[in-house]
Length: 200
Image (tube, rainbow, N blue to C red):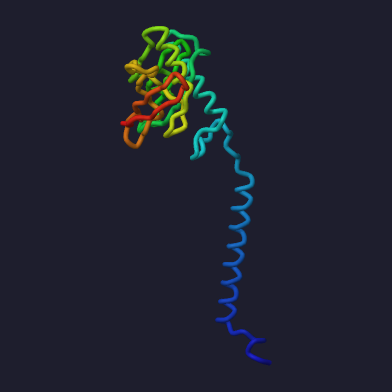
């Protein structure tokens, strides 16, 4: 008989060792597969928001909580509050929020999501008269040229000799720079067009 038909003791040891390793590998793969299949899946409430942003339900809850905190802070009805934008900050528990209240108020504030309260108010603006309230109402419905968010406007001043107002606005918070993104613009009331000025 040939050598292949009669393996030596050394060959037998190698074959046996390889068979044991192959068996162990198969067992490990089976265990991992079964464990992955049987592992409990985390509930939606316990999962972190995806990288692109919070889920629709969690975003709605967060906005409702932010409205409630602002309503308590400013003694206004929650249904009159519009959240125009919000963004995480350097502190994961703090959210930067831009909001308006339909009677002519603009707010930029920081919201503590753990304690569900307003922690700092950076812009606290109320229109001075009915004419500016009308202008404010137009501007508060405009989308930013730069971010697409609705503007949070304040600081209106009449432009001489034309039917227009200059104003300040904010359209987002930039966590990388720890600052609000603000700018200047002019609203022409005849056609309700905005001329965008410098940002800062």
